[in-house]
Length: 143
Image 1 (cartoon, helix red, strand yellow):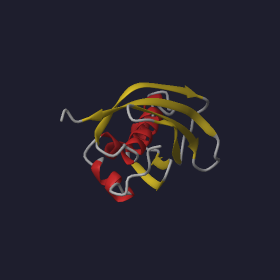
Image 2 (image 1 turned 60 degrees about the vertical axis):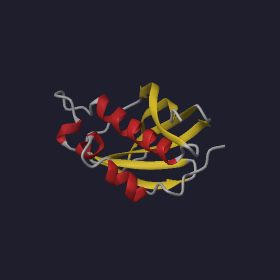
Image 3 (image 1 turned 135 degrees about the horizontal axis):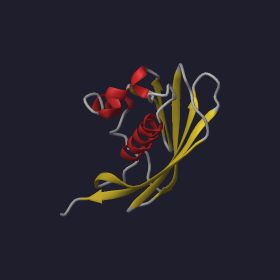
Image 4 (image 1 turned 120 degrees about the vertical axis):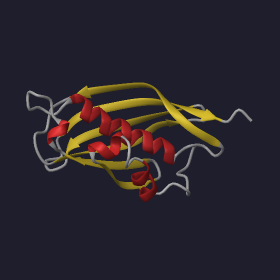
């Protein structure tokens, strides 16, 4: 089983996304441990659709970022990176204020693929608003 990499820290993961979509959306990684990564996103107008409901893409961005960074933190030794090959989300509700959080946990940590689940919830009430699953392909050098 793939273990948490000692060279990947919460501070490092928060820093690398600053100039990219996670930084723009305000994704903040909050807790990293073996087999788990948590993140949150304080809701702002940019996260909503014109109908004033939380945009599904905002939810997916939080979940995909959390699961993707969890993959980075759990890459097998010698692997260079990863890429998403499949993702799915089920939306159960919405949130109109405050923050949402995602907790990512692995379902499979292999040498060629990893499968991660992300549960997105309203940070205040704890009510689940989305279930997310992604499959990541592990990328190895051409050495």
